Length: 157
Image (cartoon, rainbow, N blue to C red; front, side):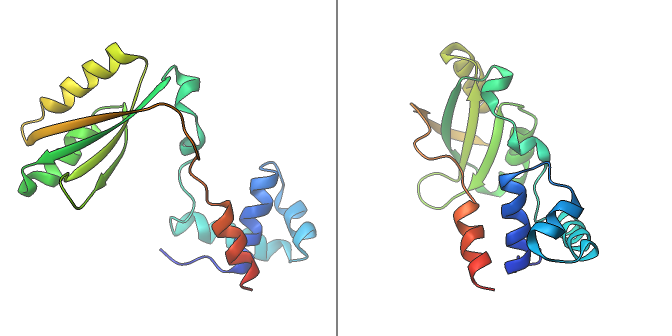
């Protein structure tokens, strides 16, 4: 994945402010040639800098009101297989390999506590899972944010 330079950051910040901006409007707003903006956006998409559009969907809009973080202790040699099994669970929306007591940290969305119980039982049914610990999020105190990092990158140019 290539890095983001100050122009890329400025383009992304402008789109963050108004996702419906056309390439022409972006080029005018930023004082950059239309072809340059178009090429930069294509490069960002091709290089994996821009995530899937579905990442912007809030789970609550799909009926998932609850968020939990499940720490898993697994048979470490089975990590790829465990991750593949977790990928089969639609409610497992994020998985991180970690250090410390847990081998994997899984972000789970659920409709309610009963649904969370069902999902955690499905996780525990994965052969390589030795132990789990679940923490329920009461509220999102600060959502995932990239804007501050983009603003810093934009200033570097």
